Length: 139
Image 1 (cartoon, rainbow, N blue to C red):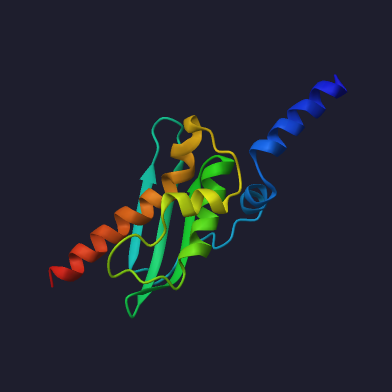
Image 2: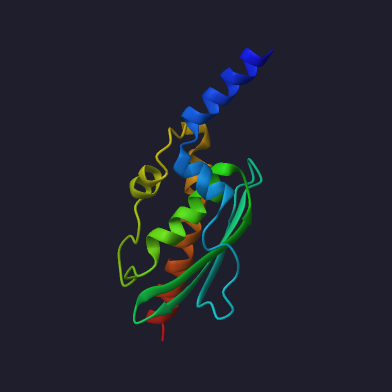
């Protein structure tokens, strides 16, 4: 039985890198922003993950980023990593962070069946930014 438990732990260690596990166990930027300019939540009905991204914008850049949510290790770690990657990024146009950039920063072998978990926070970011940009150009 001990050998079987070791094999499960070994498989998890290969799938979940130290980076991913650290961001899951110690999420960065978890919580709400009291004066957020952008608040957007995405929900994955297939697995039940829910991630809300909150951003403060200043001079067309992301000044602060936070997230809250309930989800698996991958979605929580991805949200945590994403908030670190985007602070200071310009939002005028184009992609702030690519899918490839977020996935590679997690340093894990994310299976196709779990890709939605990893990209859920990025979808929340993209949707929130799209709504914000549209509101800014409509003024």
